[in-house]
Amino acid sequence: MTIELEQARQLLAEGDLAGSVRAVRFVAERVPLRELATVLAELAAAAEFGDLAAAAGAVLDDPADPRALTVLGYECVEYGISFAAIPVLSHALELAPTSRQALAELVTAFEDEHRHAEAVEVLVRHESDLQPWPERYLLVYNSILSADLPRALAEFARLPVPDDDWKFAYERVGRMLARAGRAGAVTALDHQDLRGWQFTLTGGYLATLSPYGFDAGMTGRWAYLGDNPQLCRYSLDRLALVLSAASRQPRSVSLLPGRADRILGLSAARVLGLPTEEYEPGATDTVVVAYDLRTVADDLIATLHERAPGQILYEHATCWTQPPAVAADVSGLLHQTVVEPWAARQRLGDNGLEPVAADSRSEAEIAEEIVSADGTPDSGDGATPSDLDAAVTTFVANTCDNWLIGPRTPMKSPGPVRSSFFT
Image 1 (cartoon, helix red, strand yellow):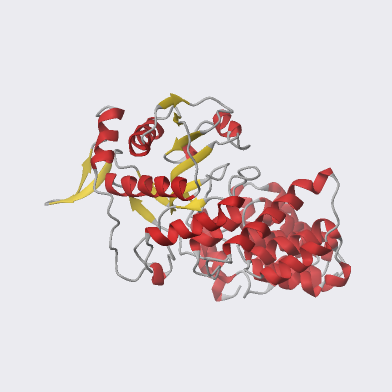
Image 2 (cartoon, helix red, strand yellow):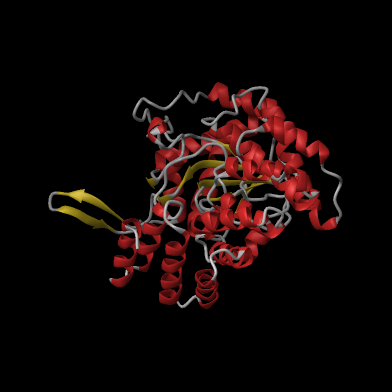
């Protein structure tokens, strides 16, 4: 066994399954395939993943069997270790270049790892064999997510209108390309243009950028955020700016039932000068306000997938590493981990870290604190590009004709703009 995999085996022997998986991630594409399959078999046995263990065993029996390799790659994808599927499926495709299943699974594995340019590369390498659905569609999709818009447009033009099975996918990439066309006229749409790509990929506007670590891996996203009333107020002011720039005049703010959602909804109503009402599915001409959509009950989330006329969904804290089931029309900020301003937390005191109890005040009292807060943006570390109100207004005014169109489909990939994150 090569030294690269010894750490993974040692961690597994110590009972640290998650640590062992992380160790394999860093070396999966550098070690001999038989050794990788051996460790995958050991990991699968420890986790009691019978299908994965059997697939790894079949590869150990015959490492030159493309079918066995494809099955192992598929199982890796199914069990959430797509990084391990990539070398396995790459070898399967070398042995069986016309295998549509190996190609499709390899593209899926690249997508799961957000390696969209490599997905494009492998699809182009097999372009003469591509079928319209799904292979050429996947070429369009991954070209968009790797910022290769000329290729995406050219390949989209070659796609035939699909039957019902692929209609949603066809219309989705069509909307993305239409939004890219509008956004690209007023913004860079490069690998640092977080707001431009947020709009292109999800159809939603990003209200604010993190002012910390932009050039140190974060590119406008937050990693860990201890939220505060000032940041909530700043995001709500930007929501008001977006509505004004898009010439939208909702009649009310709709309150979702969660405590965090109600606090922010009451704050939004004051900032926007609108009355509140309890959220009702299908409500029109209203701003539905959420703090973090991942905490909203599944039955309510399901009612927000389709846009009711004039309905605008606002989420203050959007998780970009594990996005909610629906994409907000306006996101206050993008984060990996957030602690609500009123939640229990820790602070650094004279004797080190000490607990701070959750804020037990009423929803209305906390909302009043947000409304009264100074929403002046944090100056940050000085490395983040300026994010002036005028620039946001210009972007919204020039793209809002393509806003609020189609379902609120989430995007699981960061797309062309990468950010550092905790694993």
